[in-house]
Image (cartoon, rainbow, N blue to C red; front, side, top):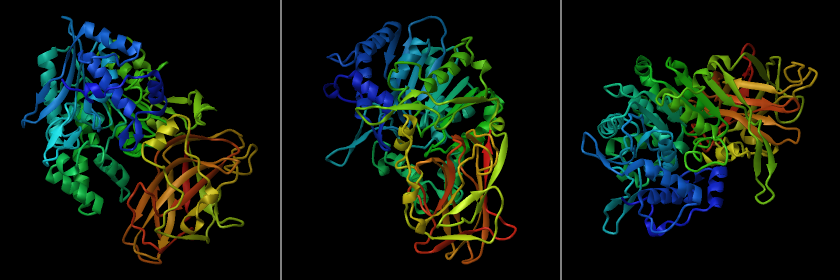
Length: 617
């Protein structure tokens, strides 16, 4: 078996590298892994397989591989799919006559395929599971040759990427067949992160024999169509990042039909076909099958997720009637669990430990506390305590963020308050108040980029947030010529300003905010991107949530009133801070229909006040 890197290219893994990955995550950029994470995967595989000619692991990891080698047989098979495609796989078979469950792990959307999470497979083996990890078809490094040909890395699977389509569902059942033949397991579970999480849910719903006993789906999706295209707005940056992270050129990695879907999506044409394609790949489309089978399902997502935004996962979760659990974390895609699946931590790593506890209970027979869990558990932004590292200047979390448990998502929000958009007593900005006000208008020039954005970059901005360094904004630098801003008074300790609650406590934002705006444009289309910020007394800000909306078919100069939901949030707004709503026409994450140089006007005509419905809990 060859390895993610050639043996002579593997360097010794250092504790400093492990600490960096644990603290900063596995991504160096939205479309590249930290080379140390890739090197660690290669070193673990080479050591586990006994082919490394030199010591490349720290003592604790060396001991871990030796423990697993003593109790299990290691394999690197190719599993042949129904259509002849060969899937790269990795097996850890426990040396026991006692029937044991198997955990099947379809890899995430990464050029390293199954290899990246070798550390997790070793942990699963020590917990008493057989392990079968595999790379979904088409995923993994494919390297061009001078003669124009291609060669695949050993952890790369054949075929083209089906994007969690029917071929991937069928492949999952083929992998189950292989597991049954080679392990004779007592039960079968699927554990997936990112791409592997969606495949895990879909296989559980569609396997003809209903053989999946439990699912763990981390950084997952419920509705792929909504993740890609929602509120008539395409999530371009997310799709571009995925296309650039397959491990090879687009024309090699996708068949002609999928290339056409991707081209149509990028160009904004034939979007009904794109949506139908996405719905076919959505676990939410098959929730009745999952419910009928009663598959215990563990879901995890993040508040500021840029690939699979939280609302569609929450909606999917609400439709499930099976034993279920939803974790919502600070950060962005893969930030909570990515490092914990890859490297050891000095202490408990809750995002991974809770996922494994789910498996232990539902397929491992453990009498743990999973039955007593509430259905929903959420981290609250940004309630961690930090100190500044003098060497790096970065914040280091000293007290973890508060987590809250609720019996259901419906219990997260206990009340809703309205913040009305109003005119300001002076200056270019509007205000947020508790009483409606009509007869005002704020206009800006559309089609221009601003400093008011959701993230600096997908994944990595949220990774920093997870690590205690949320992006800091300077609202005074937002160019008011190209956006509109509405800000509340400080939340008062004794009533009067803000909502007048008089508690002096943090405003506990819990749930899905909803925004109603009356808008007119000088063009026949425009995009609105709404951002909700927490502004501190020093006039810096942190983002609470955001969401775009695209309006087409407008009659220039005529009002249209629109209501849309922002992404869910769990956020404590301190009593002396202000709530700020900013509305722009453009964000690098999204497509837009804003006409450069056109004028967008937000107003509040008689009988149609513009307002923010803010959920509290």
